[in-house]
Length: 424
Image (cartoon, rainbow, N blue to C red; front, side, top):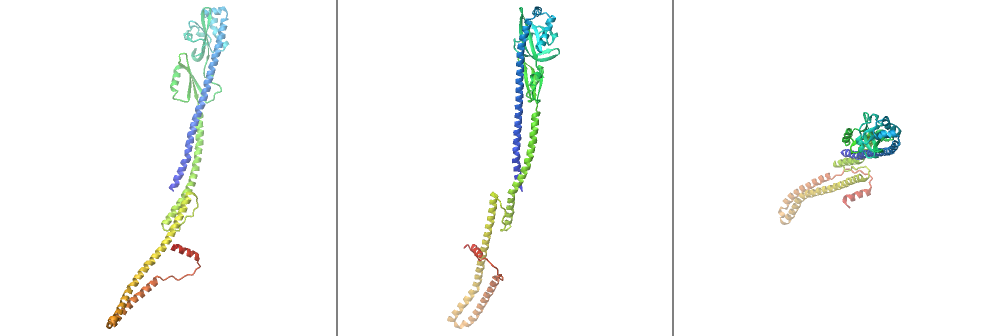
């Protein structure tokens, strides 16, 4: 019985073990698929952002060229006010008009001292200093956080210089960038984005970058190489969770099915293997009790079949050896009986022989005592003959056979058995 349980357990382990390997394989494939999809999304987003920024930079360059041409061809009064940094109504409203006409989100006109002459996105900001923008290279796009009234926006801007008389003025234009403009509209719902333009919060996200691996940040740097904005792309893990759930449900179903199959298969195989063994054990027990006629009537192939055939052959050999041993024991018994009978016969014969020899000698040498010796010797001889007679009666009684019962017999079979017993 213990072998049966061991076989069932081994079959269950062998059957369930591949399920564990399959689960690990599925887990790895799903994780790889998640990484693959994440990389695809990130590549799409990166390419789209690059395309958006390049398009806006190209538009900025063309638009600023057109605006510079427009200002250069303006009336003399406006040009005079601009060159002399006069904050006339025409100058103050100029940037707003240009903003509405060009479609730019950000537009400023500043003088060579960095003072704002006109602002289209914040008209009340004229006269404020923007010296940092004087350091920008001409017609080179760059990222900048722009303040508009009480809020900050992230922009891509470009500067273009314009010479009026003997003085330089600068036209600065730009577009506002946010998650709506930087992310493609066709992006999967699995992708979410958070746009951060606070440098302090950007640094916080930098510290979290290695903690939450599902976040993929896209940093934007200013001219000094400082991260001033962050588009934090979050790729939902719901896909991988759902995939894991589906896989686990399928694997559990497969495992249960394989468990039932393995148990049934284990029982069938164990019965196929252990049943002949149990029969062999039972037959061995019978043989141990002395029953040498207990053969196994079980047909099977393979090693078990060979074992059963060998067992039956062993029983047959033992049975034949037992029959031969019985014959030998009988012969030995008769030899011993004959030896003892011969010994018992010798005992009375010796006195008879002595008496006869004595009588013969007395008759020839001492006839005068022959008569007395004859009487004594014949008495002794009769006593010993009586003993022989008793011994013969006892032996006749011991060797007496039962009354014969006549039956039909196969003489060939009897002769064959006789030859087997006598080794002829």
